[in-house]
Image (cartoon, rainbow, N blue to C red; front, side):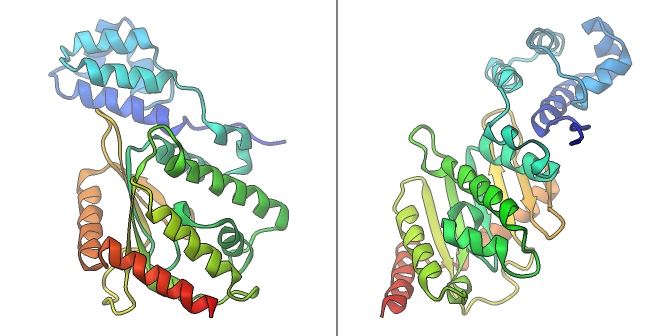
Length: 287
């Protein structure tokens, strides 16, 4: 029998963290704020940690208690608090907790900057390429699981191409990834390059190629995704690894990774030249 999720959703944890950030702008302790809210300290602590769901009325009451002059921020937190779980909830525990958290963070983002130093970033992958990445190599998954994960990744990509408020994406793509060899021959890469050209033509997508001649120190921090959100949410950095990766809201860590991204973007090819390089690789495969 599948176990129920024992930890709060990432959205609820972020709401609790935002409530705590607001409290810390005042001289109130948690105990004092709890008393003014009319609850006990234990429950209040769980609200700030996202263990318990806070009500819209309690959010507004705390905003008054804290003397917040931020109607936009308060309403945004209330909106997020009332939002229903996204499409990924239908997959339940078939997805790891860390992956569900990442999908939710990605879906809520206003801007996404992404760099993978080895492969095509997930939001830009074509279905055949996704299937190759999931079913080949040391991390290969079973066929039935692969089909589910392909569908999940395609679902994630809708934030880029949706008609209403598509996310702004700035992607750094390694030219080295264009030289990958697949059992099916060049078909997978041809399809992938065509998709990159299509996506790079969207007004919300900035795509730069990191050329083969780039010094290996660029991108040495590993695959990263940097996400910003509507006010009042703080930016998030996510670093991917074989164990599922992790995300952070720590300002120093986010600043470090943002600096790393900017430096790599500064030596990557300009947008128009990047499109030319993609087209050149595609033409080479078509010969």
